[in-house]
Length: 388
Picture (cartoon, rainbow, N blue to C red):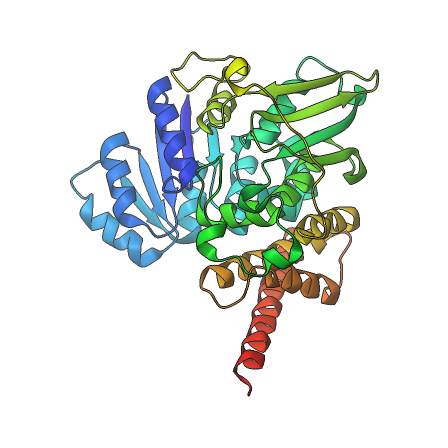
């Protein structure tokens, strides 16, 4: 099987390459944003047919540095689209962070490639468009996120109409149990210390704010055909149960495993088969007990904002996502406080005029205008701080 990895230099992309190597899968193309040095290392190790970088200047440098290898190097969005639609590719694993993965993922679907999806924002911003194109092109979308992989496994062999409720588990991040007052004082360093998972900076901050779980609610709606009211979030600090499904007869099925992203990555690449591996196993007797709590919506308002966006639909999830990306980047630069992230998102959502039946161009336009709106709000915050 031929695999292309969109976002190969990120956390999920690097783990996906480990999995591909252990399974003996053929790497067709590797795609990244601007990290030419790491992509060069990957090209030399995995020998793909094509490598692509969104940054055209970085692509030019990579082209020179791997001139001794039989690897074509492409640049810009057109180059990325070519890299994910190669004839030799069977499955595209999309692990790039943010809405940047949307256009190339749609291009891969239109080219008939199956999608191993680790990019939440693709379905958050344009779920109706993406799922319709997948149906039109006979393409499978296999979830890579541990929670959605768990739901997928619980539903396997069951009728979708018999599923009454999805239960998404969340670790609670580093601030589980914090009061709203305590949340005002948290720093980027604290927010980046996730207790259970090793992830990239943006997704780790989203986990700390519970926005990540909100994005997963919207993603689950599209993947499994559920309404927001049929998706419950529970805090499960151990991260052993990755999610559950409640059925109409009262049965609840859960999927358990170690908090290791290589497990759902491998399943997405081998389904409907399972492959043996040497990944960490869990011992229930060593774990002893598993705990569950309701999320504190006052301390973590991002989750409520996501439910609101999910219920409204249209372009509102895209506006919310864009504002969150801008606000998280600003927090990591110490330009705003942690509690200002949901404030900025909420303001953008309030000001956004919802288009209930958007095209792809409408989604992209919403993303751009919402980013500008969020940046303007952040500038206003900064000016207030500077005023005597």
